[in-house]
Image (cartoon, rainbow over all chains, first blue to last red; front, side):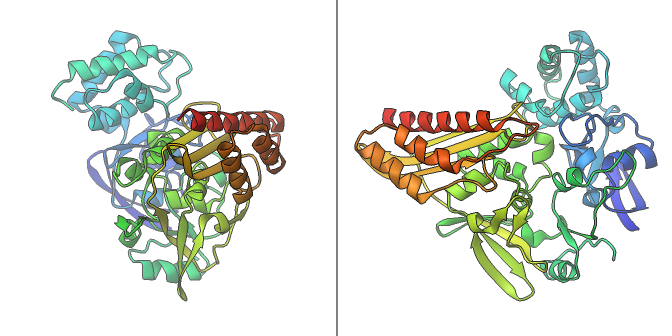
Length: 157
Length: 278
């Protein structure tokens, strides 16, 4: 057993577990954070996306050992922020949520993108969400929602 | 044996020599050894996690070279002014932001996939690797380092320490990756042609094909032929005929051998056309 310590949604946590465990499984099973979804399990769909030190990563292919000393934020932690509320409103207004399975990952992708670029072009938005698959919306409504959030949330990012 | 989390390169080498497998960002290994949801990946060896080793995070100019530490992520490379734009574009198509933030260049090289998207570029640019072990360092070219699919010259007690990329200028860099999707796709095939042309003088020409043979294809003989054909304004069919013999793709779930060969040769022709148009 390895002892891994990291910050999770703002709180210092410690877990004894094999460091090869998928961060995704640790978040869902040990910390009950089930907003983090498993889609493909191999880094292609982005449903398991979390922020690590403020940047998007796919938790299904991050070994727990690589979380050591870092700050992990899941959709549950992000949902307490003003930025989240702007994204939530924008996603609702644009009809960017249908079945909802990709939505936590899409919102994390949007946050990571806007964090580095608070007024992205449409091409930059599409690149920013290119690692996240949605099987319902066809992406146009999601791209519009991110653009709307950037507009509405001026000053937040 | 247990997994280890060293903070210094010296400790990492000791732990590696005890028989542990090196772990960088994990974005390839976690997929290769994945098991079911909630079940540990099926690693056969204990691991030495290299993320905490600050000595592997260097990214700097060193004379005519750019030195890239084994712990540097694709994201850090994409954000660095030292890295050529053509390589940033290759990395942008190779992996989404969510993978670039964790994946290392050294990992992409070490896994030695014939479809590794960084390899045609690194081999075109004559990049080399510094391998380090308890007995000292040695430098090998990326082209020599990879001996076959998943096979490298890395000894059981060695780690990749850094990648050395020569600083060079080209007037034409033509790269195409063919995959099922813009990001996160494993290549069906990829092509990189680079040249330095000034007026009618062609000073340099390099050609590499990825995912169409057990190793990346780069041929001095083929490049000499391409320079010669360019100089006499000859037909590119001769060059295509030469490379056709080297391109030996397979049929797999991503594509077919016939498609891979045809598109590779079309891209070679397009590169030669672009070179003429310059």
